[in-house]
Length: 160
Length: 102
Image (tube, rainbow over all chains, first blue to last red; front, side, top):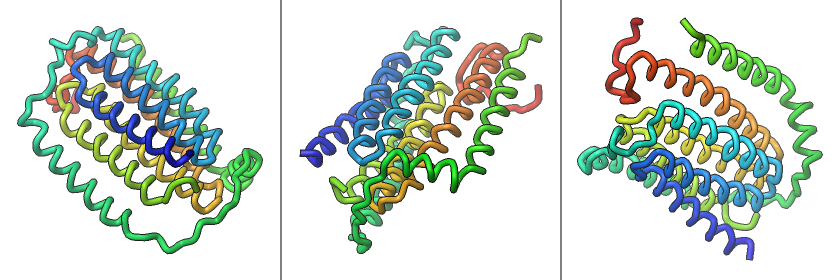
């Protein structure tokens, strides 16, 4: 039952992403992408990562996509006539390149992995202990990076 | 593990290729280009979480969280740049932003 749910959600994710990248209207593209991220969050939940699923909804679908929407509305880019859809000729070469990368990853991926499954359940306690014990220094670095991003955004957005 | 790891990697590969195509195609709108980068980073996160689920180690989930924090920093800076460039040039076409001097 869970496997069926995974395949349904995978199809929803792919359709949402395809609609997002071919959509002429930026606001509609963001809404399709939010749909795709919601089903991806559900896939994360099925893969025994409930915390990542929650953060996917809160940070990606909640914060990042709303930030995109905010910038689109602030700069008044919502009109599709302003930034038109690229022509058919512009889609050919990127599609070929993407198809080559897709086929090469698939060729590696369909080869059978010999490593056996380990049936350990990852609890949130395990996740937190690993996060703050083993990767404590990474938390410090990532918090400094967020601070630098705030300083950079303030510098770029200041009035001159 | 509810599905084989190959299927998860296949889904991630499809998402990654779609994000790559989006980044390459949408040169007329820098916001859609950033959305393509978001899709690619999500595909990377899916591979991390799938590996973490297969081997029963929480490290993959930790790195998915790191990718998320990195993405929010990247998006805030990139959108600040978009606002800045739009204020200067009044366009979001990437081809217009050829020169780095101010």
